[in-house]
Length: 319
Image 1 (cartoon, rainbow, N blue to C red):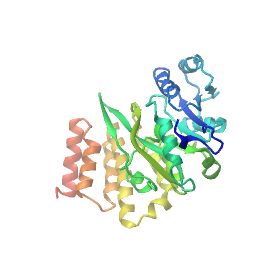
Image 2: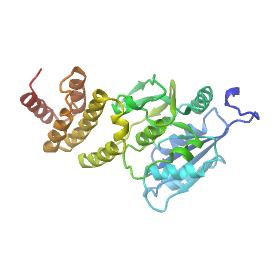
Image 3: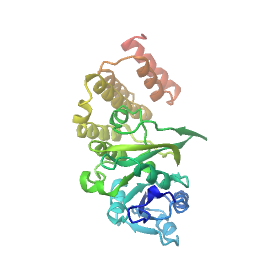
């Protein structure tokens, strides 16, 4: 074990890993095994079952390893509440998170601890890593290159940190910035990271150390609207701090995502309502925005995609 992972008394710093789970019986053993097979030895694994309806609890309780603790909610409270339960029980100096359908490479914890300890501890209180994501049947590697204050890239949706499985933080920060906001049913990880970045910087290990399998199911347009409305209100001051040009791009990009989810629902009226909201910020058909529109709608059934493009041309021209 590298000496950078030791404290002043030459003891290996403890890392607490939290896996929140709900109906994860089909995938959670893969996640658990990837934690127990880490090269970093001083760790504990806290699994929080959020009142699963399947046999998840029985699956995780069958694991016989002294490093594993299993907690169970009496009612379903959501992913943020499950993470917070784990944080309250954690004994480590560092806390890392892993979703129940993802997995880690064996050196993930060791390399993140080593890198975070090499940074200025008064500024850098957390670290993420690059990752591989399953897209269809193929793996795609997402390399994170920027570190520090990443808020602009996150707000513009140019950075996807996969924080639910790639984030590690110093435990002390929860006393300062609070825990996960349990009122968020979506964007939980992003909300927490953005709040973290108001005060601290985030280190980045460029090497891919996690495998993200993606998450099934689609969020309805109405649910996405509710989440975005709350998110944009909560971070209004942060967004407006970037200056008019960047601020307009952020709002345009965020409302475009709402439009996309209504499109996936087949709700054409609201698809165009929030597409027009997005376009109202004045960036119109810059080359990047044209690409974003295609990226958001190209996966739709052909007749819907064709209708959207036709209506855009009729309303805004093809320039």
